[in-house]
Image (cartoon, rainbow, N blue to C red):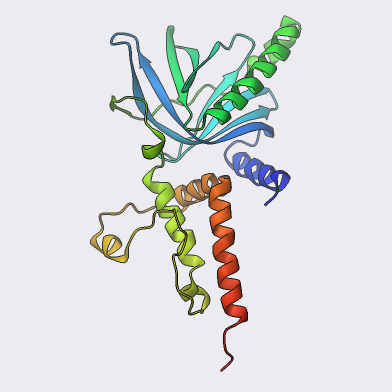
Length: 251
């Protein structure tokens, strides 16, 4: 899938939940939203994680996270007053909620994606701040940030080794199973998707592995399909199966 086709697919997905979104300026494969606890000076992981998009709405700009953990996505309006700080590994911003200032951080496992999104946001902010103030009033009529549903106990910033949620692993296993030699009627041997974790039949039978609903599977697959490494592995498996089918003896 080329970049333009991927962008259009993402845009259609976003427009299912928000018809006001007109375009996508940038994205990140996977992020996690953290809340800063000023009393303890520590970060708390929220229940929001998934693919991030910097999108254009009819009324302005928004940061939107397709939440893997809830049917409700998280979005926050980007206005000329938006305060942003790039501090590895977070993009930190402030919000006013119920008369109080709330500090949040978007954690990026991929530092290059964080830098790219930060640069795009600064370009948008420069454009907004250079426009007349009167023109900005119309852009203030935007949807407020959707509340974080749950807050987990205080935890340090995750590492790349622990960043991938169970949903992505199950989605990879599900997609892999659909492309397996058995599913396609071939007799080839070998690993299904090398490097991608998959649940074993025993684990699934015991009921201890995560089970995805249709929406969660869709969001997990969307994040995976944006990962070039996953696409390389998937394409390699496809070529292997196609080669096996082409050389399968006819009965």
